[in-house]
Length: 458
Image (cartoon, rainbow, N blue to C red; front, side, top):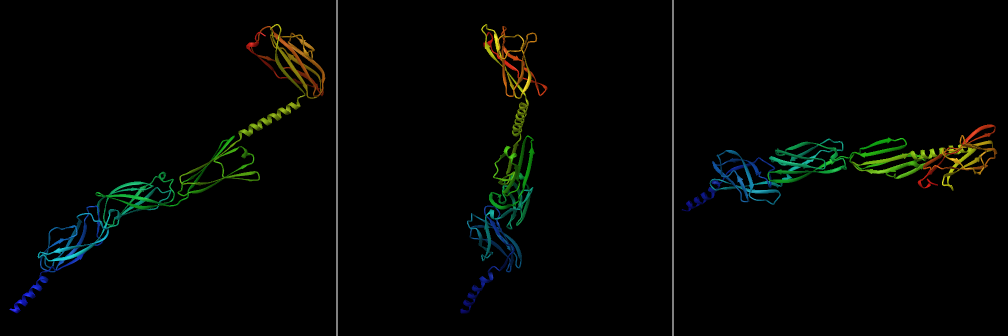
């Protein structure tokens, strides 16, 4: 009896080890990733060899994941089968980073083998990387890329790229660890005012209902490009325009120097005003020191007005000529007319002639003519005419000689019984004289009188 009990005890101890699952599990996949927020499950590739009798195996876990395939998976004795397990979380997982999940394989006899897998839990923004090549102010295009950093395929990816240089929308599928590149055409006007440096490349990525914002860097390479344009036009009013346009992407220190002589500077204006004015001998140097920003244009206007000095020179020459002409004149006649009141109510004017001898002259004959429709009054102030020619309507005065600086005043009165209205003109007086044996002539100015309505009946 004792032997029987011992045998039964040994059978009970050995039986579980005989009936336990005998399988060999090899994990063929690696770097598994679970992306939260999208429908892609966690996929594990296993190779399972059944070292025991044929059995049906069931996979499950106790930590909130559903596992596929569901139900029993038959594996024959000595058979090796490749199985792809899919783990789908039943709720939201707050943890991020590497995560170890235990799971179980259960045989038909309810015996269980416990295994575990380690994978990474990330958000959608951690899956992708975006970036670009370098550009400068003369670039017409730029190469950008988006890279899938994980061994996980996506059927439909929508991306909206945006930066200070361009905007682009793309829709595509991606394999695991795939990199897609795009060429974007650029409009230089969009970034001509930007400075060199690093700019953000933004990508709004949509997969299913999940959205993520990923950022990269665009390097805007330094380039110093300053173009200078000069314009010069106008003769009497000369204008010079100097334009300096910064077509690069760095602040450019601009120095502009213009020189003027001591005469032209007096008639020159500037816009804007120069920063430095220096004089060296008869030359004046004007200097502008400005920082020109990218896309900015510095315009300097220099205007020299030669019209004003030419007018001044013209008047000076005219005055000199007239002065010389005046000094060469031996005899100067001045004629003027003034209104006088007549007792009989006639229209009457007093005519005055001034004779001024600049040098010694001899045998002077002064002649004055009477205008039509007037008569001469018989009384004379000053020198009386030597001859009155009523037929030819002229008066003559004769002088034997006049000393230098000597002056004579001649005057007479004319009248008309017919009223005069408007502008009344008297002819110029003339003089014939002898100087150093030569006969010369002189003439006075013409005299005018404006007869108004009030003087009509005087």
